[in-house]
Length: 476
Image 1 (cartoon, helix red, strand yellow):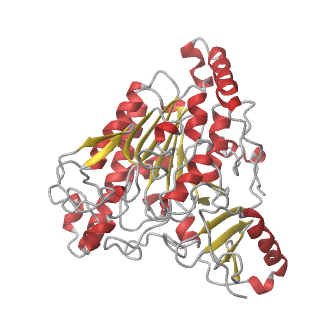
Image 2 (spheres, rainbow, N blue to C red; image 1 turned 60 degrees about the vertical axis):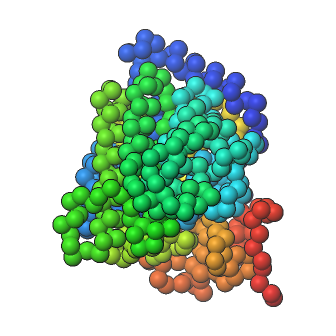
Image 3 (cartoon, one colour; image 1 turned 135 degrees about the horizontal axis):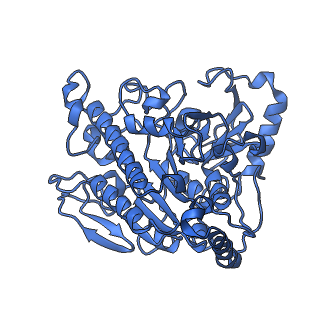
């Protein structure tokens, strides 16, 4: 059912085998200075929230300058065909953490369904291999008093939002540290059950707190391997604020753009702040002498939104791609992705390798040199691609997505072709040749009956029924 390695989970092996593998690697690296290059790398994953494929300068954004992310691309690798796990946040983050596509992931939509003890995350695998692990920002895979909270899923440290709706509000009355609420001085009248609303007194911006937390974690763990999952809430809108949803302390230099709608000034300022924060994090890593020991991977959880007054067409957020957030066309799931690792990833390189969120787990296992670990997942490590070793880089036979909101849909990436079936299970199938038609404008299904037959087979094979995720079939 999967193009990547699929082996039964044997959780008892995780701690013992992984820890032995890391210990052996560290011992082989002694003395410390001489062997630093041979140690397993630190891994930093930065996940933007609703950032479109073309929202960065290095992806040809015409309006919003992103100098630090552009610099990161110039110093590393820019991916052109990297896919999020889903077209909305919670399932996409589930795929990122567990390596399972949405046909069999625990979380397949934005319902409040938590990860369970049997789910194995990237953080858990790395933690058991001796890494310090932290999540700063937005989680979305388990609320308070559930099995899905980050500290039960492999993270030593957590600071941020558990609930994705709570994360709409950049000026909340509280955040979560580990499993406890931390009160903030913001005032939110008529605050919803999960902390939603619009603050009338904005005293502390969550992004300021998140950046300092991330910088502090790196500083505290500079002498040992670490995994940092940094998940800011930018440029997601505050959905409860209507057209005022681009919420932040001020719009900075974009205040001069009086010819732009207020929401677009706010959207641009949010991306500009994201860019600056990534720059500060990269700078701190370099200042600590960790640039050659740290893989930094930047990406987005799904395509651009049309929320909070923002019009993705104003900024051309999805560039040549069709669709936005909540669509399984590439505009909803193909995301900007940059990898930087000094001395290991070639500066200024561009990769056309087709990869996705399900590949992170396999990639981290390879980079951390964890051996004899059996995991069930849908990924293929892209570590060879990062190293410029395309000759040994395995490729996916197919990638799969399913989506439950509104008109349900399934999608497959089959080589250069993309198949979409909506509604799920028994709807008509459209087929697009992405090499010739990146905007998915021309349905070529009638010209490729063999591919349609294969798509039908794979659509049915990739979906694993789950009583929590039901879609009613059409009446035949």
